[in-house]
Image 1 (tube, helix red, strand yellow):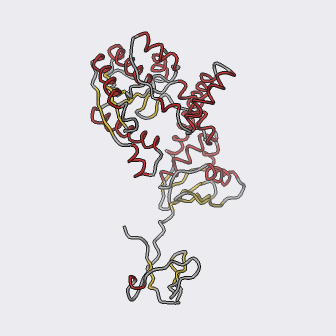
Image 2 (cartoon, one colour; image 1 turned 90 degrees about the vertical axis):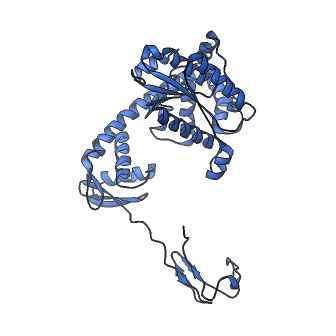
Image 3 (cartoon, helix red, strand yellow; image 1 turned 90 degrees about the horizontal axis):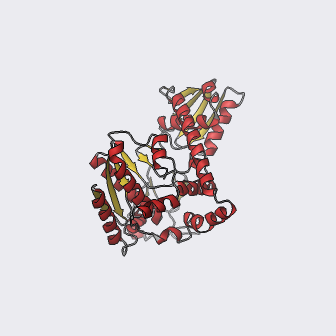
Length: 371
């Protein structure tokens, strides 16, 4: 198993680290937790596990919790437990079930890590997971970051099994007589990831048995290139100057960067100026503005504006739109309310909204929503 190589190659752990393992009870997380707990003394780290029940497979929940507890007892490490209702959360937040379950689980892991004072959270993502994510991101459309698949580390999140295949994981478990739970929903449903696992990867493996490792290797190469671009972009973003109008940088310094690094710099400066995430169309418009011969121009951005002034690019934040003032309505007299023209009539015409006059009072008004 290549977890040792991943930890060393990507500097995932250091002596003195406290590591919280995300333990679902599946093969990947059981392998991860056992490996790190067994290696803890050698690496000089402290290990605990956290199990979250998201309420979607209630019949299996108690058995999976018991399996995780037995493993942690065998390894003499603490197990933290949490639960939530992904279906209720999804409905309340307008999310898909899978996204809701991931959000609840992520929040639980972050809160548990904070309480236990863990600097690292380890998850069981492996080689095939990274290959699958690369394909998934390509299908839906992505930039450089999405081509990195699942990175070996990001902030406090680490993936020691990212170089390890599912076959190697199961061999590790069998050699050590470790039990794990199977989640049948991983291959069910019509979501993109389930289709990739059930239909696409078997075809790719039939074409080339090394398809998944090759995709995962490409994802790692892209991640390393993306990290370099991120570092170069951050270095330029740190040179940005603040003024009363906003935040500006020198255009020649921006254009000297590789385009991937320039994209990172623009994103970071936009956020520093108080704007929102830039999409591909905004990035291309800004780069075109910087490259064109003319000394001036501007681009509207989400929550801000990019303005060229000679060799400088200024990010200036739009003032927030003020709500339109309330208007008193009189029968037959149109009132302008923001982008709307509102008219109170005895009988509503096409597109009109019938309202009982008695509920409007003697002087009805149209206004913006109150908190």
